[in-house]
Image (cartoon, rainbow, N blue to C red; front, side):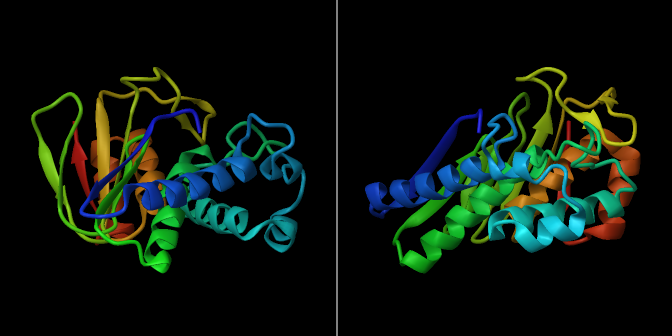
Length: 219
């Protein structure tokens, strides 16, 4: 998915954990890679919303439904069709979902130990407590069992976050925004993008109104 992944394990079978996580990540990438002409996401681009929800794989349906819910709630700020009606891009939510899927499979496998899954800064604590340092600052937060976090910023990849309303690259004074969600890495991923585009004032209002159980760290 064009980023780095790591899995931290304390007191468990590292190889088993790694194999399960790799399998989940590979499956999501195979289905949702917009840069692969043969991926399922590209084959669905010209279909209506109802057709996508009818014919797509469960993974695609889950991400698709969540992405368009966020699109509606944010009045188009978060928009999986920001490139136009014939292009469907779930990149701003897929990595978070891949983390959720990996954790779901780890839990169902009965894998032991304390585990933190990290895919490009999309984090989820399977078990245990983990201290997370924010890049570019001295701030640290703690992720506990089941909690997720995602950070959006342009300090590594440059201008790559686009406002779904204008289809233009986002421009604001933010260095990054990190969202901590009580359960879903997918929602933390979508929210961090949305809040980065909205900016601190409007983004804070949106988060408090729509997702009061989540919290944000602004830089």
